[in-house]
Amino acid sequence: MLKSTYTPDKKTKKTIIFLIIGVILLLAIVEIGLVVYNHFASNSANTGNFFFKDKMAVYGTLQKDGTMKYGIIDIKGNPVTQCTYDAILPIGEKRIGAAEIKNGEKAYAILSLTGDEITGYEFEELRFYSGKVIAAKQKGKWGYLDTEGKWTIEPQFDSVHSFSEGVASVEKNGKWFFVDKKGNTISKNRFDEAGNLKGGVAKVKKDGKWGYVDVNFNWIVKPRYDMVRNFSGGLADLDLEYRLFADACGNSRRGSPADRERT
Image (cartoon, rainbow, N blue to C red; front, side, top):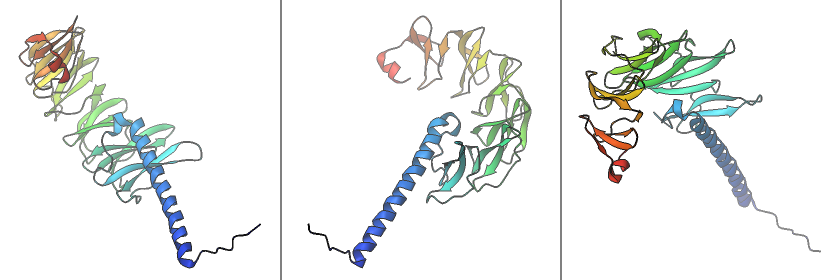
């Protein structure tokens, strides 16, 4: 039986070594990509679109105990922060919300993209970034912070939405209403539920039915629907006993197939 006597030369050896290194690097990049993707897929409601925002991205590493720790990498894959956080929530203006376990509970702080602490780990939750305003929960109540971690509206609400068009809908004692960025109540009515102001119109629920109010919180579509969506292209999709549409003046009409495609 013939034995091979082939011995690769130095150039061939170098090529093989480079190929092996290339494969290892490719596998590492794919693994990091999968971790980042899975992080966003499992936390899409909180993270939003932050994939390489400001040339940064969230990455994670699996710990020996089966938990994940998160950090920030730059667009070249270099770590910008240590991978030590239990959660990372991008909130804009080059700020992130980072969580660590404190006394068995998750506590959040606001950090810069390089990991510098803007605030201590003093919040139970951080949510919503809009118009340089961050919603934060402390001692069971929600308020709003600026990007430096200072309260613009003290925590006092049971639930909140993000600011839109200068106002936000908030809940207190089981009723929703609207406030400005100074925390002043600007709607006389109280609602069962309320959405964001969008295009000068907000969907609100009162006495178990949905309708719409204008920018002055006067009724433009009185509450009579079981379900509504936000206005889009001047129309809103409504559900009553059958599907119909209402324009911003409160006039309702049956929806055509073309109308339905717009919702």
